[in-house]
Amino acid sequence: VTELAIAAGTEVAVRMSEIAVSGDADDVLVSMGLGSCIALALVCRRGRACGLAHVMLPDSGGRESDRPGKYGDQAVPALIARLALLGVHPTALDAVLVGGAQMFVDTPGMEIGVRNQAAVRAALRRARVPVTAAATGGSTGRTVRVHVATGSVTVREAGAQEVCLR
Amino acid sequence: MTMARPRYTDLQLDALREVANIGSGTAGTALSSLLGRSVAISVPGAAAMELADAVDAAGAPEDVTWVIVVAVGGDLEATALLLIGKRDADAICALLGVDSDSDTGRSALEEVGNILVASYVGALGRLTGFVLTLRPPASAHDMLGAVVGSVLASRSHGRDYALMLDSELRVEHEAIALSFMLLPTPEGVDELLRRIGLGD
Image (cartoon, rainbow over all chains, first blue to last red; front, side, top):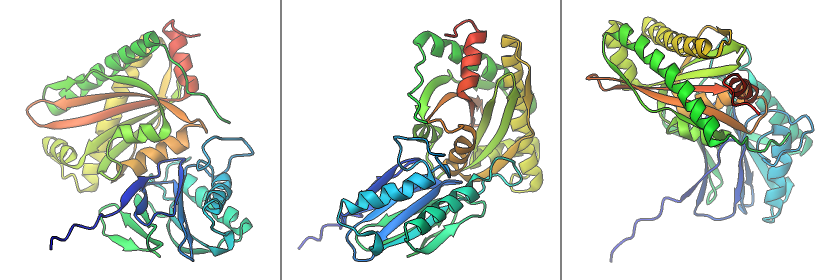
């Protein structure tokens, strides 16, 4: 009997300002090279689906944008709404945050990472979604993977091994 | 604010490419005298890109790379980035007689960035009559996407697109390559085009 290699999963890249949701167990949602950006992973505790938003800036200031993942205040409700279309109730969601680093220490105007994290956490509080794990701040780039099959979230920092956050 | 993709004509992009060519030529001459080696310059690129595409265009997002950033101000607001891979950084530091893993190595790479940006921007100023100022360089040695994405987030002023002028400098016989990127603000691009007689 020939054993076929099990597919490692289809990686779905979620780039700056993008959001993605999936209920397909083969999918792995990935944001590579997060600096000041915040990756917001929403995971359904009942295993229905997962979502990932790659947030670039904290606050839209009420401006409309056709990039629902760009601003923290818009990305949270947008991702919750997309997951609702897959039958996920907001009360079944856990949030995991990754990123929000300051890549250049002591450089004015580069503290966006801190503001991104604060904006996403505030929007999650408004939506009553708990943050159950986070790898944020510091001055290191990170890559996050959301494994739809298991709902696990893994993170890798530059030059380090991948570790499991959830 | 949703901004439509800025539309630059082929003529405008050709002119911007020529500006980048003059700037990177001057930067290449400076690098050549700094390292005592000949330097070849690639044909520069000029394109307006979605920010996520601009991050991808810089290279593989997880590659750990030296990035030296210099903010340009005055009559033209822009960000200059010099991308140096680990092996290239080691080779440059070896030519300069410093250890790339030390603070001295980091300072040396920042100084290389500073000299290249000053040369490029100086040529741009002479060409356009702009009075331009440079901030001190900042550097990071990390995932390329993390660094470039952070620069774009902080310097794109909420816009969805960036104009990227990029060129590659190759040090002959040393297998050293550096990428140079100039990211003017949208207002900066308009001002630059007006100054070279191709504005709206």
